[in-house]
Amino acid sequence: MARAGGITNAVNVGIAVQADWENREFISHVSLNVRRLFDFLVQFESTTKNKLSSLNEKLDTLERRLEMLEVQVSNATSNPALFTST
Image (cartoon, rainbow, N blue to C red):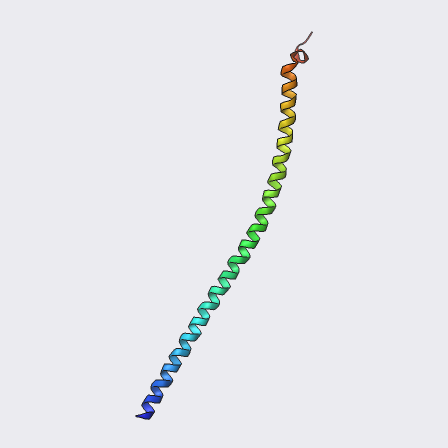
């Protein structure tokens, strides 16, 4: 009877060890995927910041051009003699 209890105990330990390894493997996979997600988000942030910075510069240039055109149109409408031929 003692021997049967020992085998049962060994089987239970074996099952517990196997379950522990499976849990560790699962945790390892989750940790790896969290790390990959984190790396992706860091890269995404960097890329997005660079693209937004470039777009901001282009927008600033367009705004300056628009302001210049608005001044030119304002000057032209306030002084229509510039466009009439004599």
